[in-house]
Length: 614
Image (cartoon, rainbow, N blue to C red; front, side, top):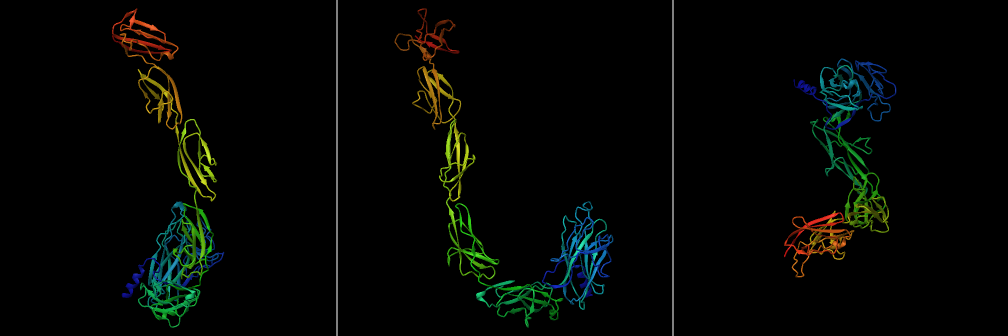
């Protein structure tokens, strides 16, 4: 009953790979090589029909290519196989077994890994995109074909846009007295369009514990020793994880090429101390649950390898050349070394400070000479001398950005302001100075004799000329009004300027308004006549303000003044530029009152009123 339960446990196992260490392959099926199909599988291997060409449902061929139907035309999977073949299967409409093979020479009570590579031959675009996926079940039976030791299914392997080989595996254990098993492959897929597959590289190998090797310093896999420190010795320990084996028997092996291995006589313990090592040597250990299985490669597993590498002193690195570059960027010095050798960088030819380890390049922003020492990557053996490599960071052109003013309607010369260089303006020009006539952002790239470049930006703002719109007079005051705005200053004589456009208490007469920008960027002149008409007069004979006399009319050629009383009666009228009214009508004094005037100058008419006071 206990044995039966053990079998059932394995029957329910799923596909999976050995989690520990495996031995060398004890059985391999690659289906041969050649450009012709076949030969057919031995009798009893399959229930499918062999064809020497295009296989229909329920048939197979063995071929190095698949130029059939609308399948992918593939090569086999076996690496390095020239014209290698694979088993090509067009699955039957009826699910069931299509392949079996007996594997002999196994060991009892031993765990094994079966693996195989599968490929879905049907493109995903075939069968209207509804191709039937492949689905294969793997079974391991005892040699009586009555006890199922392990089973697992790939599940549906969907059609893909390109041919992809995929590996599947199954782990099983033999029982006491058992030295052979039967491998079966069953088609779980449905019949119809699809369910077409290729099989290659069927492999059986032992599956043991995961076994790592460590030395006394807890190094794994590799130990490097410099030649001057040889011969070396190493103490190794085998570390199984007990994932498969409950007991362990050991046999240590060594190799000088990693291909041919020999047992080390008498070394059957979990630990091993080597003899003096003069040249690179690899070590591993065969492990089995029973010592008798150590001598049978079909029954044991192999540990990871541990390599002791004896490295000679490297020669100094080769400089890749001194560097001339520009300041403001990151530069690097570089050397070359053979494979397996790197470099450490120092600030002195001997001794000094370690700047960077394990790099063929040293990145810096500082001018100087740096020294590279060759170092082997495994043992850390270093060269007797160091290689000097220099880097010089040349100065960039020193440029200052500018903000300049362009006067409207004028040109402006702007300069890169750095002689003996080459120039590239964003205007397309290539001289040190250029002349512009419009505002904007101007940039120039200046490249000096060391081929180092810097940029200069010049922001140019245009100052518009002032434009006088009108002069607004208010009796003896006036205001200069401009059409545009700016940092203007104003004058009515061209000599004395003020910030305000307002002028007070001016006599009537001909003037010129002057407006200029304070940057002296353009000026405007506007001739005008300031017409002043008294608001009242007092004809009392005291010699002060005794008459109504317009000021500024002298500047006009075409002039007429008319005076009216409150009833709109015309009292006086004249075209005399020196005219003044004494407050009489027909030589009789008029009473104190408001009177109106109408001054016509050319086509312009100015009206208003004033007071006569007695």
